[in-house]
Image: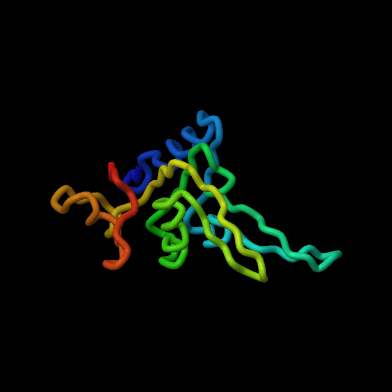
Length: 143
């Protein structure tokens, strides 16, 4: 579900409430999150120089809900990175000699402001958020 509307009608507060009442809930800001922070990353251990996987918000919310605030302010490459997680409910990673498929069976609740910063009643719902033409909106419900 993606909630789209004017700035300041408590969309962020609603997402924080959803995170608190969900048995498994993770809240993140789309503006400050990277693709690795939303999905997964490979980290080098300082002492042994070994690599290990570290799950991001979508992996940590497996079996629950991830709340992404300011979805409209996310960089396009970060939106593309969570596309597999939203469609297939898995995250495939192949870095530093490690290959893995991580579960991300999570519901996504996001919020965004309109394209021009204000809500306009004339266009259809998906027209209120700027998506690239080759990457359609991943949300079945825009509210």
